[in-house]
Structure formats: structure tokens, C-alpha cells
Length: 156
Image (cartoon, rainbow, N blue to C red; front, side, top):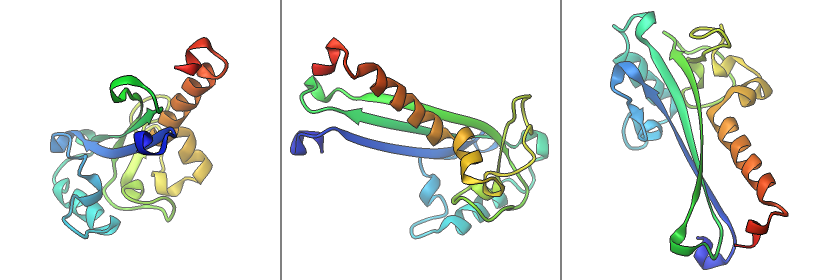
């Protein structure tokens, strides 16, 4: 896109990795329950796959990667920025906020696993943004851009 428009391009992707499922659904998170599946069906499949997995073995993480390309970078060079948040998968959906797997994902707290008692869907948008994988990746991108503005390397 950047080569065609002459403008910088930013893209992101994220997914949920569940240890007990060998890292699935991973890059297939949005379509894990099949073509045309919605968030509810994806959550239902996840909970079904984990139905016999005990609380202590439901570790998971959300991972986000953001790619940035500037026009004129040789060989299509891209900068990438990652964010991740560790947590666990609950036994049932809770909360009305968020989307996707938010109602079943309980982020770890400052003291480790199960540090937060609420799912992402039970948190306000501001609370979730402060913890989320996408928020962390975006803050990393923001810091990178802030460091480039006004630097000699800025005119690459």
C-alpha cells in the first residue's frame, strides 16, 4: 500500500494463544469456529475445547503485532511492534464490554496469574486499554515515532 500511495502504511493483527491448545487459535482467532463464525461461536468453540481443562492449566495470552512501512524504505523494510498480555481463560463468558474473546479472558495482575478478578469484557474501555496487547503495541509504535521526529534518521 505504501509503495502505491507514497504514504506510510500501518497494519496490525492479533490473536489469542491458549497453552492447553498448543497455541491455538492463534492467527486463526477470528475464524476459529469456521467460515462466517461470529464472536459467540468462536468463544463457544474455545470453551468447548477447554471444558475438561482445570483452572490451573488455562493459561493464555493475547498477542498483537503492528507493522509500519514508510515510502522509500529499501526492500520494503518494515518496523514491527509487539504487545502481549498474559492471562487465563475463564469457564464462562462474563461482561458486556469489548468483543471477541474478551468475555472469557482474565488478564494477569501485577502479582501474577489471576491477579485481576474480571474479564476484559467486565472492564471499562480505559481499564482494558491500559492492559491490552493492542494498547501495548500502539504505545511501542508511538514511542518509536516520537523518537524519530526531528532525528537525522527521520529523512530516510
